[in-house]
Amino acid sequence: MDYPKTRAEAKTSGATHYFTGVPCVRGHVALRKTKGSCVECMKEDWAIDNEKRKGKPKSEAAKAAGRRYYEKNREAVIARAAGRPHEEVCGYKQKYKVANPELYKALNSVRKRRHKDATPPWVTPEQKLQMRQMYLEAQRLTKLTGERYVVDHVVPLINDVVCGLHVPWNLRVMTQEENLKKSNKLLDTAEVT
Ligand SMILES: [Zn+2]
Image (cartoon, rainbow, N blue to C red; front, side, top):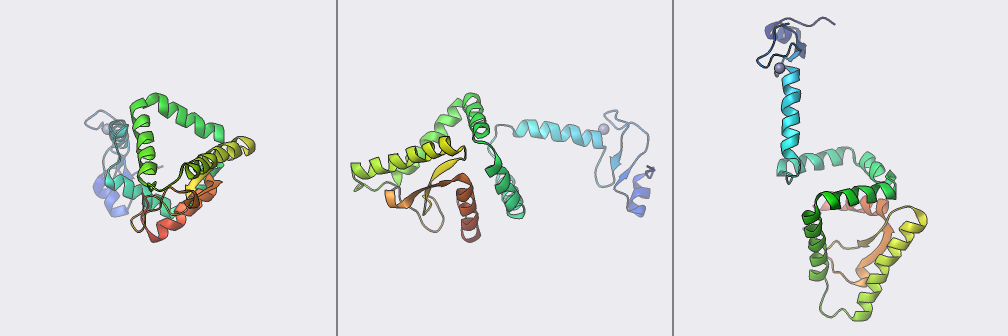
């Protein structure tokens, strides 16, 4: 393919890339972007950025971009997540647990704390047992069917609009797929964290 030889030429012809044949400051003889720089330099910079981002919490901008992606590609994202075999998901989790033991513990205790905070003091031991059984039921169904079952809070524990309780009548066992579809709907009306 023939590329314009200068940026000026590329601009006038509307081409996205041009090729000078001259090495860039880092010594690449490569295409250059009309609105950018040497493509090899850009790749190097992305790789460095990606490496830096690893293990760091996501920025608000990145989270917003993720949400926008999700809004646009909702069906595909859900299908991908639901289509993942249970063993594979457990594999990720196990790897994650081994790679980030401290973070894993922290996240787990956050979840436990969240449940505890949402459990009213008047919940009886029988009701607590009832809830425990729902978690066991979800585990049993997951093993039995190979599809992932989870315990869902009908009214989410954390939501900008309402806060649900960790009580038996706010819990239900459902497939992960149904659960993802649900948070889907809630995202339409409120921001769920
Ligand atoms: Zn370069």
